[in-house]
Length: 535
View 1: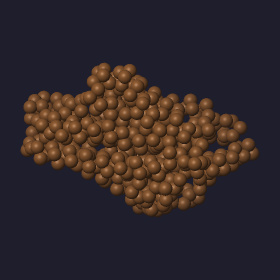
View 2 (view 1 turned 180 degrees about the horizontal axis):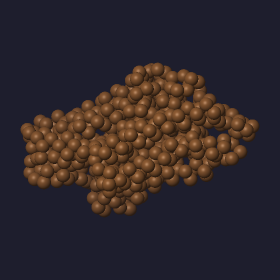
View 3 (view 1 turned 135 degrees about the horizontal axis):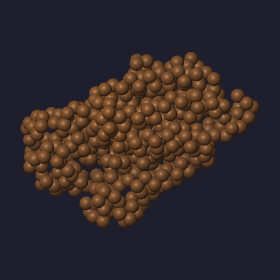
View 4 (view 1 turned 135 degrees about the vertical axis):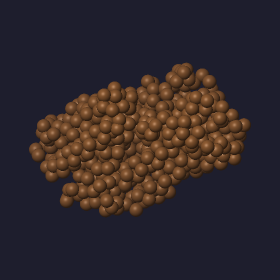
């Protein structure tokens, strides 16, 4: 490594350590659990039960279990990383540490794009608010009035995140209590109003559209997006009082609570939809505001009023956490040099990265412009976020193979959990369908422009070496896009089921082995060019 490169690395390490040291270590177990739970339970509980039922019928229950298994596998991988390497915005730092600058840039760019997920929460609020303010939407697109209100709400959430993390945690704890109470009351009230037996077997049977529809419902039905969000606590590990003890318990508790709640809501929806709405099967059930309108049909006007109020607070709470989370991601991306270094600055008085917050507000506004429909946004953003999970599986395997990287040893069985997690995350991306991936994956590959644009020849290693270390990810994205076009999930069908999913699994396993080998080589030869001192 050149003297200039070494000097630049030393400067980066010192500057990053200074900014990381300004973060306030104020978050305990309950605050971290509430962050994870609140980030999971947003607009998903208001919409996903209907979308999943329309896609897979009663078999949608299996999709929730499948999503829980995926989250469990990925969570174990990320818990080990968070316990071993606690850092603000860790989920976008680990790919850089394990795979080099090209991998770190592409994954980081996908994270920046997934800021649009916060726009999905804002969009969900607008859809329910349209019940009272009918001029907010024209079809499925925000009107100028709706867009102005959505931008105003985004600005308010950003302003509420401008102050100390302890204030953020206290407000989020209050919101989380309400977000638990309202779904529980909803399930009890719906069943108490009367329910229809035989719903798991009538109207085409348990899987009226085939079990393959369960796979499509995972992403297209909004289920992956709805369960996603557990990693939020990990990105606040740099602000946790005792991350090695509190992070694992907080992440798993948040997932467990959310999954139980989603399953109860799915049962309630399946068993209480009026019989006269099922004349065309589950595909014929169509509500603009599913649980709110269902409550009105069942003469539960008090519940409908409560749901329409919670329709603002629940996704609003998730968006509140999302804004804070996105700021930590942007802060970490600045440390990665994927974004300008100025965005790394943390305010010394509040411990908040203000410049990162301001940039994310601009990104949210951009995503509100072209996308007006909740399901469209969550499908694309969910795909992008799953790339973080795949990259984390590679990172934990690389760190385990590197004798110079101490690991917490909190999770047993990582030797097999990591590759399985990578394969499953890849399958979930593939199952979301060609119509989404044809947009999502090329968007991520556009991050190559950022990689070359942010590269400084005097400070970085040889370009050929960086391209070699990250070639697996470029190949992964390109081939996955091709397989999606060939496959049966809204693709051309040239590769029939189930051989398409099997081909994706075999391909993913091969890429995982390639990625780990590249990461180990990178760690052995170039780690001091990127590895930054942590407090």
